[in-house]
Length: 185
Length: 202
Image 1 (cartoon, helix red, strand yellow):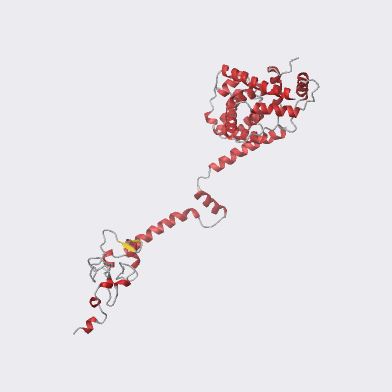
Image 2: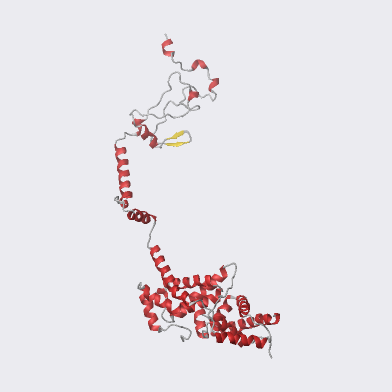
């Protein structure tokens, strides 16, 4: 008697294993699960993007406001506003004035190198829009030339107090005095 | 190709017609195709991956993938063969990707008594006086099948467990008849050696 499995025995064992099946109830529900997945995937595919989801959310909430028009209306309003502001703003050169150092003003007190002012009240903001900040300095666009001939920056050729790097060493007798003109004969 | 293993009562023309209807968006038509093939597809995948949870997921994935690819189905072969190819490929990919393998048979499988008595007789012949525990024997068989390579396992599952013909397997795996036969021979040899070790150890 052969004590080993031969090829036919193995086939018998495998056929026996092939009879393993779950209960029939499982198959009764399986096709429902498959169709459910197909339908859910199809519905999720139909949602194009986040904007549709937001508008759908508000639509579901039955809001009277038609949210779909919000973005276009906001964009039109923003563009109109910008055009209106630009038409009522004088050219940059008219807005810029050179700020002379006030008498008695000490250059060492300067915190902002290029103070910008406007002759028109309320137009200061427009100056700033045409310039950009870099750290604590103003950088002007190349078309504008708001750099005053008299500069308050140490080392600048237009610096009224000479180009000495050390202001403390500058002779105090040359500092402009508040009552200097009145003291002149 | 014979449709010997196809358990469904649908003819090839009926299947093609249902495929056309499903492509047109008829979910009921696709449901009929699912019901016709689900148990065979599930059983094959279960024998490949070895547990119900994974087999359930992969069976659903198989039909889902088939539904999405219905337009690419060429009507020069059987729908069942095409479906089988998707299921086998998904199973092999899954087996290669998973880290830990679990092989769990059903606790209360719906075995037919005639086949069980045949197995009991076989074991008692091979090992007289041995107290045969069928669940233990099945566990050893699962372990032996799991040691086969994916390609050998696929051939054994399709031919010896599911009863598919060589020609059908050729069409599913898209390889020659000789390749199928040689893989089958090698796989049986390997299983024989592993199961004989079991007999000797017991």
